[in-house]
Length: 474
Image (cartoon, one colour):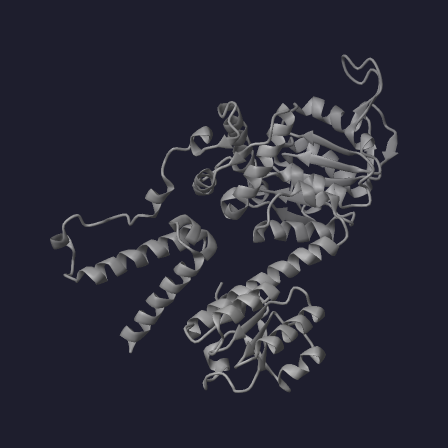
């Protein structure tokens, strides 16, 4: 994770630097570590016990520091904040001293053999470690949210959904959940219900496209005896069943146009009439609706009432397709494996890293539902094995083939410009890195995993390409 990422996407990292005597090599740390907020502490190591670590992501101790003083400083810092990563940068540090400090809890120790680039990478990794640890700690101390267990994933797209549910869950407002087929719209609706004060009341769901118009009206509003042929008894409708709770209208875009007018009146007055009756029945119900079609387009086509659309679209909530939350695929796969194994009453199985990589590269047009079906098939095809391979999911195409350039010259004479071997290899490496980053939407960790290399190696290669481009520009 580069400092430029933090600079433009979140609060810039803050590093507190204690400079011991004699000083570290003579150069401007602020200029070299661009993209971070570097705070030079005054008073040396003696001021650590009184240091204010609020907002600090990492502590850097520079200069020649005796081992005993370094251990004391480390202990004092961890008394203030046990999760604070502490980095020592001492040109004269011995290997044995570095081992002692690491065992005492130091994040990393740098010596005379380490370059300034290594320092920058170490600080970057320490900042990422600190923020992830703080996130885990805040989640552990946060109030329990049972509905959060329904939403599997930690991607930014899923976190947006989670934050929206926290805000609108406790409210009474109507929510229109949109998204492609199989994205989990009903799961989001159930999370909204569980996040509301109505969580102990019923949530009633009905698919508006599953029943013909005459039966759908009776299903929604109920009927009295004799209202139509076969109505031999009075029957309560879904709105009455959901009284003081939540009603979920799935596939609302397929509701017949005549029935839409009656639904609009219910939303306006919170009153219903059973089929065949003139009596008004008041209902206290929260309405959640879902659609996988573009309702605005349906309004233009005259297939959906505009006034009903605005009544339903009080709070729009779009569930992203699986291809836009690719990083959640391993978590979802493991979740479905546990779910299927528990349902079948068998020993839990695990998915190989190669299979997870294949799963991440699939387009998944059927979204989460298709992934769940693929996991169920894999569990069945694995037999007695406790390991799931890519072939169990029906995935056989090597993902690495998709990273290759679309056109490679078999004969060097076919290349447009003659170049030396080292330059050709460098260009090919650069192409591979760019394709991997494109495939993973710029996620360097995922790109490194895709290429089978360490994340730090990928970062250093990218930086070398950036530096070579800068030199050519000069």
